[in-house]
Image (cartoon, rainbow, N blue to C red):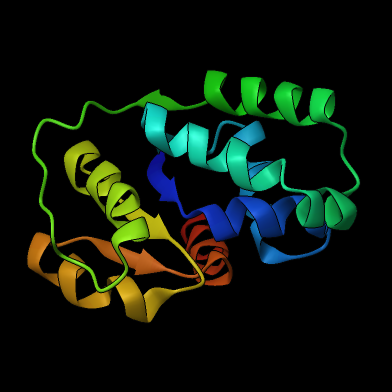
Length: 144
């Protein structure tokens, strides 16, 4: 079973489109084929972004529905203790908590649409950085 950290952009995209690759990744989480790694700050980041007015207009979920989604997501996730802070590793300070969750959790991959932002730092830690579509392709190839 793959253990991954999902960038906030992936979670947002998954809820905005039922047909995109990010939603496919979430479906695999629901099926137990992927285990997301999370930290409390990362879950709070998901909540903050998903509850923004512009995001609610795009995905159409109510506050209660977002809370239910996050509760289900958290229950399917593995918590990560951030034992080591590796900052600064990235050019965008907001991405540091995502990277630290992946590094401390020894993730199989960090899944993001911003591969370039994470690539250099991830290489130092032997961490794979994949777009959602790439992750889905690799999982399909394993199953064949």
